Length: 324
Ligand SMILES: Nc1ncnc2c1ncn2[C@@H]1O[C@H](COP(=O)(O)OP(=O)(O)O)[C@@H](O)[C@H]1O
Ligand SMILES: [Mg+2]
Image 1 (spheres, rainbow, N blue to C red):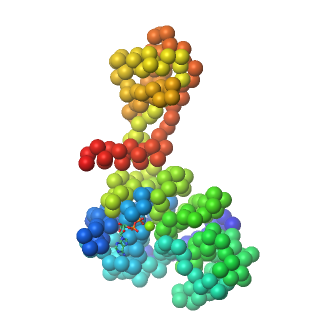
Image 2: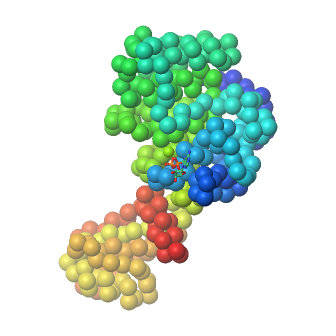
Image 3: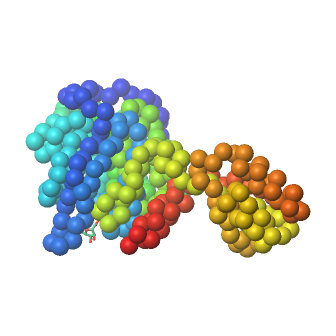
């Protein structure tokens, strides 16, 4: 897999900082609202995760964006172009894999790309070698797709997207079915595509993958976006946890929760877990240590646990649960 930085073919320009912009996008299936008033803003040039559990409406949103199914309400723009009004111009620089990429199994990887390229601009055929090389399957280009592993099919899917020199790639659950090595490769591929100035939107139910791969995220549940923004900004709004090992956890719990610090704390498996607001100064950690030591508690270990996206995600969903 090569990491060469290429220059993007200029799109028919539309000035917009957003690769994807939707307002109030809604899609219903009978009485079920699969996409519910979605206001999505995906900045250009980033890896953006659309994160949510199965059935949250990720695939449906992507299908609506690509015009594979119509929206019941709302507006959308791709690369600054109104969809569906300017759909053809917009989609000319959009590459997508929805669900599993589908290919002619009895044809080779190269033959599949030749068929797809023929349906595009003439330059697409010129991009076949580069695309195969780019995703690391140039050496298997003359094997039938039926002989490809799941990971190789995913790569071929990305290669097919690259034929159109996309400014925006939309990948629906690209890590599905990949083994750990395949996931690492896919992650690197996404990162290198972003390094070239492309925007990659990927959906996933895997929190960990989104956290590793993406710069920004929208968290979706039951068709609604709960939160969105750069991961660092979202994490800044979550809490800080301090884990403490000491000789008297129950006494430590009392000292910390009854004093002026007013920390939330609990004892789990002989460890004391203290939760502080995210904007708490680090001095609070030193203060915890001081309170314990002056209270005659022997502190063996004191560790700050920074919130992972997963922890944050669980916090958000449990808060939602509280409100229901
Ligand atoms: N073609 C369809 N007809 C009826 N219901 C559908 C259809 N496609 C999706 N749904 C429903 O819409 C909801 C969202 O599905 P989907 O977008 O596939 O979620 P996700 O991709 O996040 O797993 C689910 O409740 C699903 O059953
Ligand atoms: Mg899906």
